[in-house]
Image 1 (cartoon, one colour):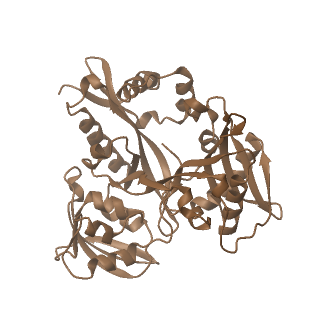
Image 2 (cartoon, rainbow, N blue to C red; image 1 turned 60 degrees about the vertical axis):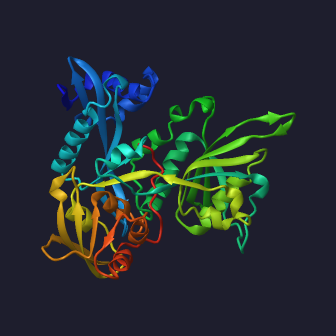
Image 3 (cartoon, rainbow, N blue to C red; image 1 turned 135 degrees about the vertical axis):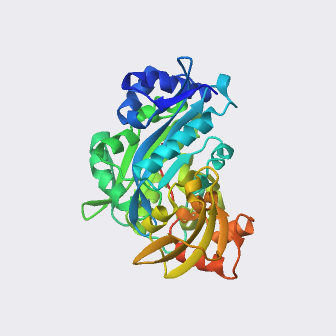
Length: 408
């Protein structure tokens, strides 16, 4: 393979994106480049070049991500990875991943994450499924809440610019409570709700922004679009939820109640909800939510001791383990983790391990989205000493499932 892997110059962005989009069977539109250009980190955007032709590429967005224990770590958000169909199966993507992970390590980032178009590809490079996505479709006629729910506060609609200012503090408070969520500033939050992101069948749509407040303080919000559809004068209109965030369980229930009570809507849909979506248990008829789970964010541990020391732990404990990592051999070996709510240490050891697994499994358990027991039942973990799986799960436990509402 005579292909050069290098970083792009700013003026090469369009050519690089054109090559990557070709891998997905798409063409780059000028307005799409205008939308993304301010957020592309050129010094982290790789291109594969053969005889002067751009034939593939891969990028990274630098994020601060919430991890278990309410902490946050710098994370490499891998994005826009692709190779032209004319150059597939020649090792170009492997070369891109090799350079990218080496550079991530050199920068001192201990964790990488991505959304995988083809998960099989990224398992080869050490990624494991770190969170699950929930897709839902609920007819309003079956949206009654059960239990002792009573509404509180009030909800009002905001225009676009006011909503961004008022809702960002809510997002910031909410994201500290859930592993996998990213810190966002005003500029990034505005990009998150830029209507140029909307899908082709929603090009004429605009977001509605609803904020729930108690005593004048906004504690929850919902952003959604409405697609009108009338069949013989009967509404089949769809409300699509882009995001719902809240700082308390009551505010969460109240903002969902508002969304589910919007008049003339037949069905409420969402595709990117946490796997432990509380709405499922709020409903009197949970099955009507039609909640379907699938893999979402994939996680790659780049530096084993650094990543494990960087997250929090539910209880005091000690576990030794052996990691296999063919793509990043610096991680290979045996470690002992001693951790608890007050902190953790992780060091190499020569002792016989309690558990043995590959780096993929460590990515799966890192945010708490998968348990050691689940992986053990799937024959993905070798328990060498009885009770080690249960002990590891007690240490790594989280009370909420990881979720990243932001596609990158």
